[in-house]
Amino acid sequence: MDPQKYETVIGLEVHAQLRTKTKLFCGCSTEFGKTPNTLTCPVCLGLPGALPVLNAAAAEMAVKLALAVHARINPRSQFSRKNYFYPDLPKGYQITQYHHPIAEEGWLRIDGSGRPKIIGIERINLEEDAGKSIHDGLPDSSEKTSLDFNRSGVPLLEIVGRPDLSSASEAAEFLQLLRATLQYLEICDGNMEEGSLRCDANLSLKEKGSSTMGVKTEIKNLNSFRFLQKALDYEAERQAAEIAAGRPIRQETRLWDPVRNRTWPMRSKEEAHDYRYFPEPDLPLLVLDENFMERAKASLPELPQEKVERLIETYRIPAYDANLMAQSRGLADYFERTAALLENPKAASNWIMREVLQYLHGQRIDIGQFPIPAERLADLIRRVDDGTLTLTAAKDIVFPKMIAGGKEASAIVVEEGLGQIADEEALKKTAREIVAANPGPLKQYREGKRQVFGFFVGLMMKETKGRANAPLAHKILKEILDGDKGSS
Ligand code: ZN
Ligand code: MN
Image (cartoon, rainbow, N blue to C red; front, side, top):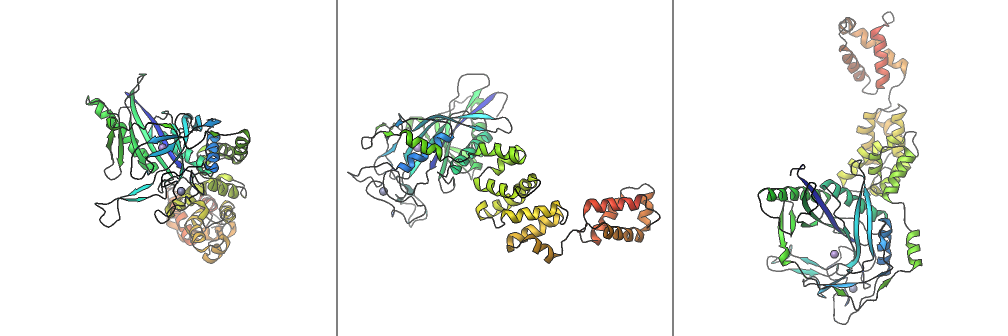
């Protein structure tokens, strides 16, 4: 796509599953992964005559998100029926919000690689999830579809973002921040693989400087940050190519195919549903009183953006580090506990950004399952800082052994004989022996062939099995080679 010619306009719509114990309108459990159809009752199976009753915990969670994204909360909101037929929707309609959602007009501020940008949130709807159709893994799966209604009636927040995003990376950043916000609030686990967080994205191209919006397409069910970015990049290119070829963009819903790395049309506007929304007659208006709002406000934790600002201020670490540390509450806590024990907090974020995060990603675990307690990591970092352990030995030997064996750094240093040699007299002695044993290279060095210095450093490290304190070894060698002619 030619960025001189077009601007990309992207909006996200996100469904977040709320972490309530029970469903939105009945007392059935919301637990994931249970035997199909064991968590059901007449209400969530849509049996005739069954009546819904709103779960107050879900409303409180919706209000928390609304407050966190600076949205206007409607003291009176309304549930509506969204009518459509699908086998996993036994009532023939979904209870959602339409005319009067629980909250409107919110925003989040993304960092935009140093160019902060406000991304609008049009509305937040409280709604129920549908059941699940299972097509694979069954006997005769080519002919049958099975239905699991355990998920039917699980509470969701539908978060409709404004089309304020202008690139795939901005979209990913917005989704990361929204996910972190939901997780900080402890109202959604944010697990995209299990479907607790689902994302649809719409994209259109607009000619630079023009005020006319292009025709948009919507890409459904993007279940990872990588797919979101790839699908949006692909779709921008595809639309640009269509326009260049003189073909109009069709308003349609498309699906991302991760195998072929492209999007495919799923259904066009002509096939779009008319949902015939109307107010849900079985539920009263949802009225939020002052007490309810105050309680929700009082229970808000420190939010991701506030945490980033505080980490920068308190520990004087770069914004880049602070953003990484604040990606989860657990990681930020770990960083703070480590940094509190160090003179140089930047050393803590360095270790966490590289060694710790690399290990967590590799093992696909989160910081709560990381085997090294913060105090022990701080102890390891201090040993490097005060020169008793080389950085290489700390990273390559001690750190992996601390993970594997649950031992403290001090025990591993003793076992492995890793104590760094920072004893000036001992290093001088070794250096003199090395220089004396190599008169040829010494002569070359003194004749001006300065690159021979590296040869001596190499010998020094070999002689001390890599334990020599490097800056000190350099200083001593230089003194001996340069001037200390008489004493060698
Ligand atoms: Zn139920
Ligand atoms: Mn929805």
